[in-house]
Amino acid sequence: MRNKIMLILSLVAFPIVLNSCLKDDRGENWTDALKGKMYAEIENPGFWAYTITPDSAPQNYRFLVNIATDVPPTHDVTITLGADPAALDAYNQAQFALDTTFQFYKLMPSWNFGSNTVTIKAGTRNAYVSVWVTRADTLDLSSKYMVPVSIESVSDNSITIAANKKTILISMPVANQYEGKYTSDGRLFREDLAFDRTFSGSKNLTTVDANTVNFPLADIGWSVNLTVDPLTNKVTFTSKEAYAVLPNDLTTNYGGVGGVSHYDPSTQTFYLYYYYEIGGVKRVGYETLVRE
Image 1 (cartoon, rainbow, N blue to C red):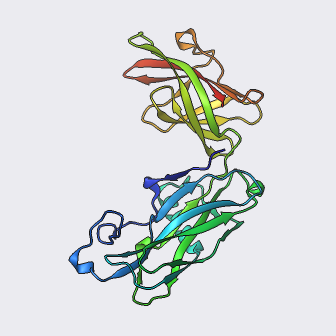
Image 2 (cartoon, helix red, strand yellow):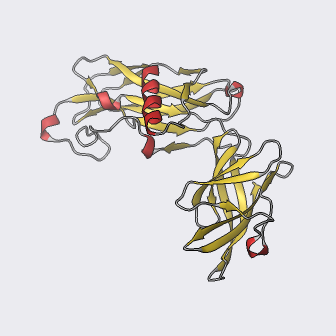
Image 3 (cartoon, rainbow, N blue to C red):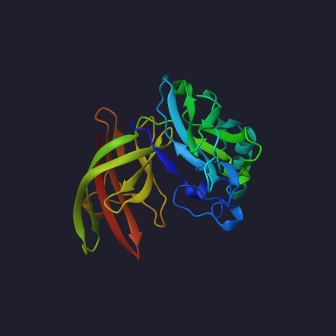
C-alpha cells in the first residue's frame, strides 16, 4: 500500500495569520517592518493526514521546520520539539463544537522522534524533523490516531517562536484491507438516454475507517464513500457531494441494470450498482473495481 500525504484545508486547527507577514526563501517577500527579525516555525503547520499500513515495522513521517527571516542566520540554530497533547485536546474540542458526531482523535500510542532536536545550519533556513511510528499492527482500525508536535524552544533567544505556526497535527489513519489501486470499468447513462457512455481507468481507494474507503464515482470523480459490511460484504454508499448516491438494487432496477453492490474478497473486486438524481432525472451507473 502506498503511503500518502494530504493537506486537509477545511480542518486546519490554527488560523495562519502570520502567512502574510512571515516570509522566507520560498518565493515570498518580507515587509520592511520585519527586516532583521527571525521566527522559528513549522513550515506547513496545522492538520495533515498520513496513511500508515498495519505493519509492525517502523514507519516515518517528515516535516520541515524553518527560520523565517530575510537574511539566513549566520550561526547554527537548534530547535527543540515535543509532544503537545494539549493541542490535540483543543483540536478535538473545536471540531466537536462544530459537529457533535465528531469522533475524537486519540494520541498515537507508539511513536517517537528520530531526534526531538534539529539543527539549522548557518546560512540556511530549513531542516527536517522525523516522526517514527511502530507497531501499527496493534492499533484499532476503528479508532482515529494523531501525533501532535509543537516547537518548544530555540537555542538563540533573538529568534521568536511563531505562536500560530509552531504546531503540526499529524493524523495517522491505518490503511484498511480495501485501500489500494483498482482498475475501473463501467457505464453511466441518463434514464432518458440524453447521454450513455462507458468508462475505464485506474482509481485509488483510500481509507476512511476500518470498513470504509473513499473513491471517485464513475467518470465524474465525485467523492463517495464505500462501506463494506464485514459479515455479508454488501456495500453501501455515502456521497460527500450535493447529490445523494443511492443503490440501484434488484428492486429499483433502473435501466434494467440493477444489482447488489458488494465486495468479493476472493478476487478483491467491488461490484457497484448505483444512481443519483438531478432535476428529477435519474443518472444510472454500474462499475467493477478490480484490485491491481
